[in-house]
Image (cartoon, rainbow, N blue to C red):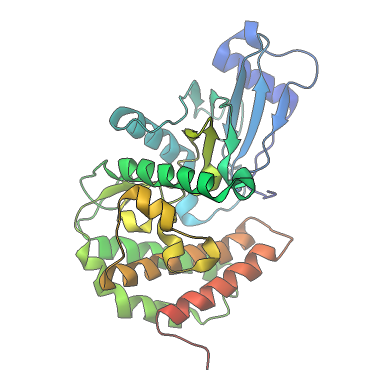
Length: 328
């Protein structure tokens, strides 16, 4: 996926980064040792074969001169902190961190190395799998997501703080930040920004039911799941985690928006029954937050293809309808 946030580096810079992480004896020689992994949407990632034959992955944050959405600032630091939490408190398979560098000496952004995980990306191969096999994987994703949500925080909000005891304040603030990002770049939502704010305010009391801050991945789609031999081999991309309501997790999105697939297997694996009336309202607000980001980020990432923008605007209109707003 192409995006101006991808901070590509020269072979010379990549070799210098390998040397700092693994030492001069493992710096690759010749050609063909670096391959960009193109499936990601935000950071650039390279598969690198070290001189001794080990394959590793280098992930590099966006360059400082590229404007990102407010919630994406410091994303790599969030990922490193989340990986540490997951390894300490769960058995969910995630990559180890071989080496991380925030010095900006060899590159103009943060970067880290991790092992290359052998397996298939569920988001890529999922549609080619027999229905029962894909459902079995999604049950595993649901169970893994529940384990991640079992990590508790002291307050709602960013992992590094500041936290807030009110999920209503935190979540409405998250949506407001996204809307301000859109207004700053004059992104056409197809809806008046004031109307979106009014819809959020009308339903915000549903958020008061949430009182326990849980670690949420938020971005745990099938495309961030590596599979091998019938099991989850690794969950990747943890840069959007925070303490919030587990119902905001990606796996629940399809309970309201059919364009995101079928949530049945995920919910079965998670152990979540049908949503209550209040949970349904909350989940629709979380859909609103998600599709707003999906519309607005296309401008920040410099998309030249309008496919995502057009699709996300349709989902925004659908979500507004679920929340009681239809076009005149």
